[in-house]
Image (tube, rainbow, N blue to C red; front, top):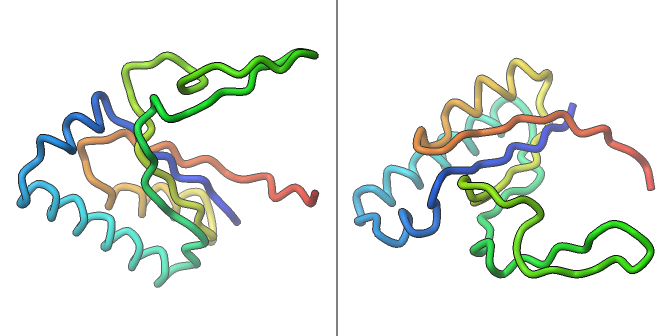
Length: 116
C-alpha cells in the first residue's frame, strides 16, 4: 500500500537556515533512520526536500485557470519535504513517520493508486 508522507513546520526554511551543524546533522540522522526503516519494511519510492514556498506557482480552478505566485494555502506551517513509500499498512507508515525529525508535523496519507 502506498502512502504520501508530508513534512511541515512553522518557519521551516528560516529555522533550517539558522540551524547549526549539530542541529542539521540530527535532522539528517532522522531522515536516514526513516529511509532505512522504510527499506527494511517496504519500499522508499521517492523523497525529496522542497524549495521555499515563494517559488511555488498555483494553478487555480475555473475556465481561466489563473496562476498565482506562492503555495495553494496561506498557512503558518511550510511544507518542507515529502516521501512516497510503499508499506504493508497505515499503522506501519505512521509508526515509521515517528522517526522523522520531531520539530515538524508529519501527515501520512494513503494514495489511491489510480491508473492514468
